[in-house]
Length: 162
Image (cartoon, rainbow, N blue to C red; front, side, top):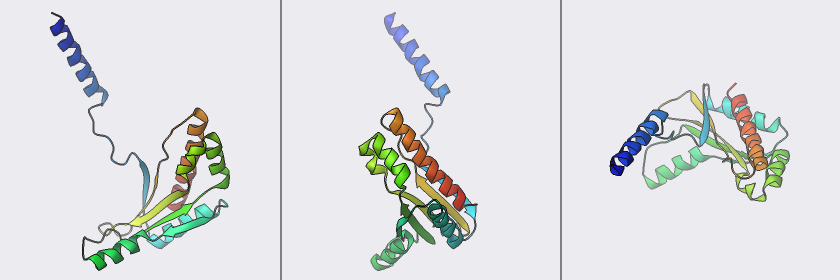
């Protein structure tokens, strides 16, 4: 009798999970935010740069990821072209970063921030602007500071596609 009760209980748990959506596959892009706009790469990239510098921040580095991958693809003779254009803009905010690290000095791993701007060969004229979502970790204050980082990145990405 106990065995039947356990089996019935397990069946209810499994059914409940299925109804609640627990059986759905995880979103493979849940770690990032991506916006897409019909435009040209240079315009969107420059708008992203302006959105960063207009907030008083300095772009520390521009990674020319698309150029590097294309150059090495040809040098190595492997793979297809991955991007028509792809750059990552690296920057930091003295104010937001300081608050983030004051809440938890280990949050240093979330700095610098990076906004990627790219165009795929199979989708010319569709420019993607994306960033990694910071993980909401630590104390309530830490999570609040990381939400401020995510909002900053989202504001910049949205401005880049306007």
